Every structure is written in C-alpha cells, then in structure tokens.
Amino acid sequence: MNFGLKGKTALVLAASKGLGKASAFALAMEGADIVICARDEKALKQTAQEISKKTKTKILAIPCDVTKLSDLEHLVKKTIKEFGKIDILVNNAGGPPPSTFETTTDEQWQNAFELLLLNAIRTIRLVLPHMKQTGSGRIINMTSVSVKQPSNNLILSNAIRAGVTGMAKTLSNEIAADNITVNNICTGYFLTDRIKSLHNIDKKIKQG
Image (cartoon, rainbow, N blue to C red; front, top):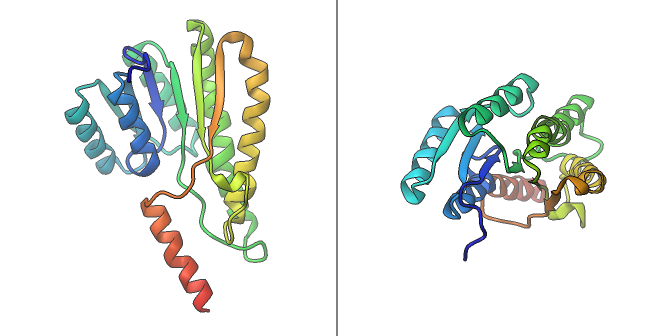
C-alpha cells in the first residue's frame, strides 16, 4: 500500500527500541526519510543500521535526552540542516515508573511531567514553524489506552498522558487551518521491554 510518504521527512523520538523503533521502521518502509533519537547512542546506531539495511531509506540517528530542551533544539536543528524540512513528528517517550498515589513523590511527578507532557510541548513548538513554512504537517503523539481506562499502579502515566491528549485536541483546532493535523495513538499492550518489566513488577506487587 502506498501512503504517499516517499520524500517526506519523519522525526521519531525515543526510537532505538519498542514502539518508537517500530514507528520509524514503518515510516521508512513507506519511503520516508527518517530521523531517530534516543539517549542510548549504541542502541540508536544499531537501530539506524538495521532500518537502513532493510529499507534502503535515508536515516539520521541523533543522540538526545528528550527531557532536555537543549537536546531537542539540537535535534530539530540537525534535522532541518540534513533534510530541509520536517513533515511528520512522532512524539514518543519511555514510560514513567510504576507507583501508587501514596508512594509517588513530588520529584517523580515532576519527572513524569517533563518526560511525557513538557517533552511533547517543546518538540511541537520547535517543529511547528517548519511545518507552517511548508504548508502541511502531521503531528502524532504516542500515548496509551490508559487515557481511556487507567491502568493499575501506573498513576503517573495515567495522569500525565491524559494531559497530552487534552493538549493535542486543543492544538488540533488551533492549527487545522495551516493544514497540520494532530493525532494521538492510544496504544494497547505490545510485548516490549517495558511491558515485560511492568508485568514482573505487577506480579511482585500481587505476591506481596
């Protein structure tokens, strides 16, 4: 199936593994030029090599901590320098640690906010002027099915991802006239490293 992505530039955050990697690979299969980022430079390079080998597409791998504004600025700047535009943004990040309301500290709340919501806000703010300049764009936020039905022991993810959903819906109305769409993908359960980890933690909680 041809989705008309050949020649488009897609920026995918946190894409060295898991759903971010799968998203980058799917976009590359459709012919888009890909920029991926992650904190683990070794894993990032391996993913870039794997995608390039299987799809023959252009791919740029940039180490980046998505909670740091300076890293995000560098990421967008290098993407524009390499490809001249950003047509697709996939906002993605690893999930915050499991916890309950009473065991969650202020620091954990702040970290989750910076990881999931502020990260998305900052990246969209950096990318938006370039999309407006080209006259179109697609912004996609990877959230979770928990925005519809919260999951046990994931209060940070449940609360903050709901904020991403509200932000995205509001933004979609504001920039629709610029031919830029904003969508959330509320993913269910895939057998990623995070899901394996959460399953083991949940088993320990149930066992006391």
